[in-house]
Amino acid sequence: MIAYTTAYPRTRATRKPAFVPTNKILIAIPYWAGDQKQASELLKLLSDIEDTHNEFADILLVARFDCKHNPNDIERISRRFNVHTMTSRRRETGWPAGCNGLFFGMIEWFAGSIASESIPNYKAVLINEADTVPLTKNWVQTINAAWDDANKDKPVVIAGAMVGGAHFGRRHINGGCVMLSGQPDFRKWITGTAARFGAIAGWDWALAADFEKLGWANIPSMISMWQRPSMSLEEAQGLALNGTVLVHGVKDYSLIKHARTMLVK
Image (cartoon, rainbow, N blue to C red; front, side, top):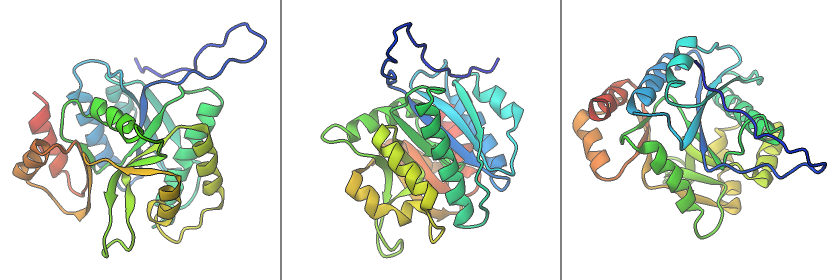
């Protein structure tokens, strides 16, 4: 039985009540034909890590316009999470246009669905690409709390794995391992940006200066590795011992395999 989240019920009052916020985050897992198999293995892992139904986050499966959702993936992840599915309406392909289109298609769905109250009023959405893997069993609760901590002193609109230095050209939060605010003003800004964004570079890099002005934060427990071919079990265990919760960028299946060894009994 697939568990889909629903909108909050309205009262009989004439005036529409404010949409009730939820303390949950939404974990968006985007994929296209090129990484759908890896996303499927990640979803199996995410389901198997959980001992009970997760109360800190729901899942959104995001397929590119030319990719179909796997019913087996939906059935399996639904055992442990409430699940939404969407297929992007945007038609871009290639790099960076395809990556940008998939992201903005997701963010438009996210903003529009909250505005129409067809999904809960999530406080944030985590973009968790197919090569972003958890290293701790309580990773969802930890990431949920990390968002609250990032907003403790002043609100931010984006937080996650900050990368920088000459190799990247500018400091930015990597779009494969990032949290974005569900606040109305930011939803309005980011969907407006989606309508006029050009494919000159990845959205995370191109919009870095805007995000910094709007408010951003590094989450030290989330790290991003640039085009990492593989990882050993010993390194994965060492990262976990040092407090790393999510790792993005390992391109083969090694980290998914190691996380299963470490977390699934």
